[in-house]
Length: 435
Ligand code: SF4
Ligand code: SF4
Image (cartoon, rainbow, N blue to C red; front, side):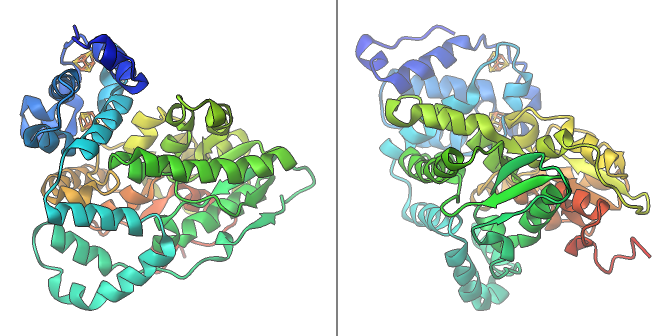
């Protein structure tokens, strides 16, 4: 694609990078059919190619974002399905991140939208605050849960159970089981997941220790910053990342850590990209790149720790929902499925597995109609396989899918923990799946 940036514009590294990405698009349109918003709406402006054109026009003219551009960029899930399909290797992820920063810096959203976005950015990365907000909102939520639109989604979210801090949230070192320590790993315990599903971090710590890992839970390692970045607040994302890098590198220098384990693939994608986040910052860039190089999804680490110490469980049918951040963000297609098969589950594949469930961070709150349509389609394809369990590796997808199905939705780490001697995942209790 030809571009028309002048020298002054290209002097800014982020614009120069955006220009490089824009030029790599050959407008072939292969990406259209795999874009969930184009599939739903059939409008070129809601396709990757259409968005790329709009971003190009916005950046080339150095103008403030306009309402139409904002509407179509806001509808993008950042699912990155287009990056899997694109034959030219267009780095859409960093292009749309840059566009979002430009939008936040130049466009004034309506007041309700601004307040909602701010509220989400304050509450979600802080589990203690999130717990309090949910408890306070519970009364009004009982009345407002049937409301349509964003308010209804927020009210229904407030009716979800939230949990007190878990034993695994405290800074500690969990010793490796067995005679040989195979790895020393740090656990990224995340943010909102701690309040919504503490059993995921507990299962992750147990299964790692059982398979020979010393697991370190570090003080100061928290929200990865993905939410802030996807809302166009790069500064906030960098502040959160800086704190994580500092907490991790202090421990890593003290006693080398083999991997930083994430069990939410949305966070994993972000952690693996810290090098790019600090590309222009010499002072922290090197450490950020080292940090990013050690970030791993739990399934990658467990596959390396084989063989699994499996116990005997009934052969349950598991359909695996690969989160967009897992399959398109981290390009991980095999490890989580192999892990479930090695753990003794019968794996089944849904059709259209490449399409998003509509969760995408806060997308299901900010774009409830579109997200609802994607969810309906996703749940139908998952249920079509007649599974006993739906497995996935991302808390956002778990919450989204569980809101629309009676099939239990369980994290991959919980299933592998159970299959190797851990407790039954809470979502499976009382389901009659085991004697
Ligand atoms: S597939 Fe890639 S090169 Fe083709 S239009 Fe889409 S982004 Fe551009
Ligand atoms: S990230 Fe997803 S929603 Fe956004 S343009 Fe690409 S395929 Fe479409």
